[in-house]
Image: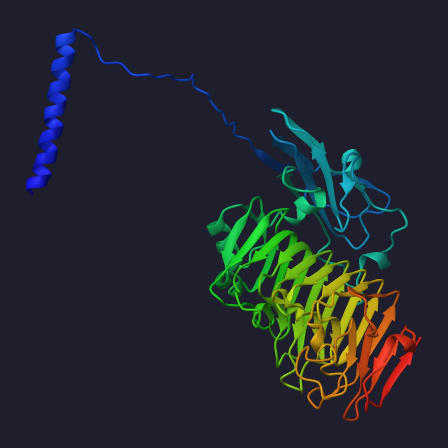
Length: 482
C-alpha cells in the first residue's frame, strides 16, 4: 500500500510543477496535430418487387372456334437489374390455345417457365403474359375431346400463372437465379445453419462456415455456393449423410477442416443415401469420402469438380461386411482427383472393393501408390487419365507381387489394379477401358495394370493389350481383351 500511495503522490506533484511553470512563463501548452475532412460513404437501399393480376374473367366456357379475353399482367418495380419470371402451369389437356407474348424467353431446363431481363430504374414496368391478351379454342374440337375415358365431362381444367422476380447480381444466369427462388440467400453463418437444419436449399452470397453437426442433422441439404467458399469445421468428427438422405454441394469452394487423421472419413455416406458434388473445388484435408461397411445401396456423383486430400484415399468403399455393396454406385465425370497421402505416397485415388459400379469419364486421377483399384465390382473408365506418381517407397513396390494381398490398398503398386488375391473379397471384378491413358511419374519397368483372380473368382479387363497387364502368379481366371 505504501508504494502505491507514493506513485499517486508523484503524479500529483509533477502535474503541480508543470502547471506552475506554465503560469510563470506566461505561455500555453500545445501539441503537434492534424485532422482530415470527413469521408462520407452513402448506402442506397434497393428493391425488387413483382405483382401479377388480371382484369378479365377467371371462369371460361370452352366453345370450339371462339376466343376469350385473358390478360395476366406482370408488374415490376426494381431499382437493380433483375430477372423476372412467369410460370405457366397448363392443365387444360390441350383444349385451350394461347401464345406467350413477345419479350418472354423460355427458360432452359424448366417446362412452362419464361423470363426476361429488366433493367434498373425508378419506374414501374408492366408486361403482359399472353400474346393479344387472349386464349382460343380450336374449331376442330368435338364432344369426344371434352369427356374422359368414362364419357364424363373433364374436370380440373385450368391455366395458372405465377410470377417471380430476383436480382441479377450474384447469379451466373437466369437459370441459376430461378433455381434459388425458393432458397435462403445469405452470407450469414447462423442463417445458413438454420436453413440447412430446416432442409431449406441455401444460396451463398459470401463465404460461410458451418460445423459437422449442422450437416449431420440436415436431412437433404442442398447448398449452392454460388462462387463462394464453405468451410466445414469440427473436432475430428465425420460428416455423415444419414440413411436415405442426400447432400448436394455445388458451384464453389469447400474446405473441410473436421478431420485431422488420414485414417478417418471426412464425409461418410449412409445406407440409401446420395452425395452430389457438382462444379466444386473441395479440399478434404486429412479426410476422404467413404461408403462405409455394411452399406448395400448408396451413390456418389462427382461432376465437373476437383477433389484434393492428404488422406490415403479420395473416394473409398469398405468391404468389411462381405454380403453388401451390390447397389453402391460411384460416378466421376469431368473431374480431377488428387491424393497426397501424408506426403509419403501411400495413397490411392479410388478404391472400389464392393460389388457395385464405378464409372469414370473425362477425368484425371492422381495418387502415389495406385490411381484406381477395382478389387471387385464393375468399372468403366472412359476418356480419362490415370496417374501413379510412384511417390510410394520404391522398396515396397514388389511387396505383394507374389504373395497374398492385404486389406484396402495393400496390393501391388500399379496405375490400375483389377481383381484380388485374397479370400476377403468374394466377388468377380471387371474393368472396361476406352481411350484411357495410364501414366507413371517415374521411369519403371512395372506394367501399368496389375490383375489377379483368386479363390474361384474371375477378373476381366477389356480395352487394353495384354502386354500392359501383369497377371499375379497362381491367379487363374484373368481375361484380358484388347
